[in-house]
Image 1: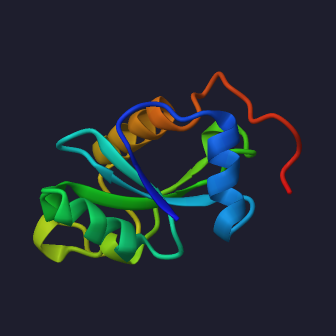
Image 2 (image 1 turned 180 degrees about the vertical axis):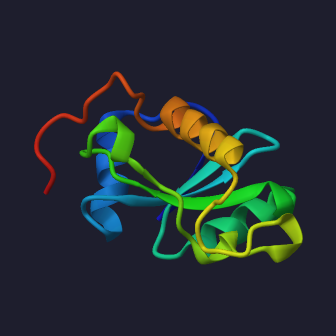
Length: 124
């Protein structure tokens, strides 16, 4: 189950996306250019392919994982195979550019769970 979102989803929806595959986290791919996010699924590459089919540009797509039950400063993990793009100055699975990390966190908080919000209940 992969959901393309352009606006904030509810905590219940986020929990359902987490529970569908990994229980305590959800994979995501963010399109920095359009401000669109694909959330869910088993592999970042599937979410990436979905966004590319909808017109996203490869250079604007960055993958990571979101742990909604973690403390705000540890919710976003910037690791994905789709991030390995030497042509975009990112030769690692992690997003290396600090400025890009800030953009990714801002979009994740806009769509999923803000830094001043807490996920209801304990992690599964």
